[in-house]
Length: 117
Image (cartoon, rainbow, N blue to C red; front, side, top):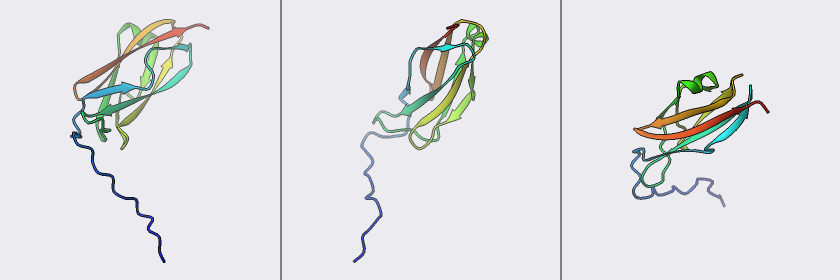
């Protein structure tokens, strides 16, 4: 006899249209030591809670925050799980930096505080 290894196709949940309604980060506000970095994963979902793949996510740091942190890349495309990863690196200046992640007109803001110890 043969066993089928083909997964059963998952029905697409109703209400999934691929239109961005939510942009979430895996962490909200956090602290970084000088020169330290952290990867922040941004997830884009639609009204049905489904991940939105192949969607551009743009990021921006407020003017004062640019002296304190750097985010790379400046934009990233979501994978099949609706996720995009960004690396936030603290510079030598302490203080707060406000970052914004934006996709499909929806924004998610985070605050990063750079501390000396």
